[in-house]
Amino acid sequence: MNQLKERFWQEITAANSIMIAGHIRPDGDCTGSCMALYQYFSKEFPQKETNVYFESVPEKFEFLKKIQERKTECSDGKRYDLFIAVDSSDKERLGEAGVYFQNAKRTICVDHHISNLNYADLNIVEANASSTAEVIYQLLEEEQIDCEIATALYLGIIHDSGVFKYENTSRKTMEIAGVLMEKGVNTAKVIDETFYQKTYVQNQILGRVLLESMMVLEGKGIVSCVTQRMMEFFGATPADLDGIIEQMRLTKGVEVAILLVETGVLTYKVSMRSVKKVNVSDIALKFGGGGHVRAAGCTMTGTFHDVVNTLLEYCEIQMK
Ligand code: 5GP
Ligand code: MN
Image 1 (tube, rainbow, N blue to C red):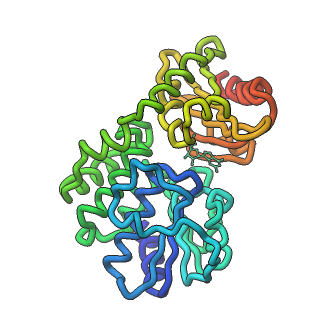
Image 2 (tube, protein in one colour):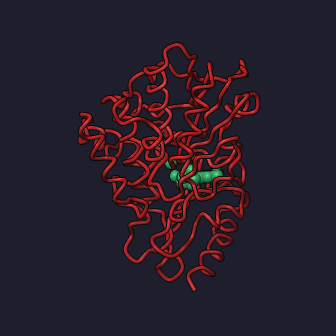
């Protein structure tokens, strides 16, 4: 890490213009990590031109300082000295921001996905880290981290560690969280208002998906589906589905949970979670996706039953 940190700072020092962007449909880790870097560079290097881009930001993250300064489109395709890809395991997941990656003079990728394809000039990928925010914390100087930067990092850590409960949570995660707490983060508020709180619509759609879920693999698997009609009926957006797969995973006896979200004709965004045996990242990679050992996703085509049966076959092989 020390050597990577040194190379990271060489790149930052050499760049006069920096673009930061994460993956499509940014989650808490992606948003918090990008904003921590953006706030840090804006504060420490006001002479540099630093920008941050998001495809969209869930409303619950809008409280982060300076998030209103983000870019929301990439049509200028500007050639930056340095592009930093955050929390994105492959180039495609950058979405529209891929144009900045292509055009940049130098590129860095900061990530924690085991499936990361090391696609940048400098790749800082720690697959054991709870979150990209944890990796970013280690790149920054502790003394320069103010309460707002700490809040963005803390947000990233709690979202990707499921508030410190997933397997990826380590002693280091807790120690970093401790330092961030001492910077004055309102931890209870960040946890409640960005992680646990749900809108009425989110609760309703959660209820509906659980109601229609099915146990498979003799009680070791659970599958469910969100159709476009359901999304329209509830007036829901993809961000309203956060946490549903986690509730499915927590079903007693379940080793693997699969949620299909219909995105087009016979097309599904697949989310997978496992408890302690199935490597869902391996399965997602077979279908052009990726993620972590216990949480991964991909996009697949076919009928609901075709897609589910294909995935369950791979799960079964691993559970033998
Ligand atoms: P989720 O199920 O919450 O959408 O994603 C779980 C994990 O898998 C996340 O870490 C996410 O980055 C990764 N993931 C989900 N979908 C894809 C995908 O289509 N491609 C890749 N490379 N990773 C994905
Ligand atoms: Mn992440």
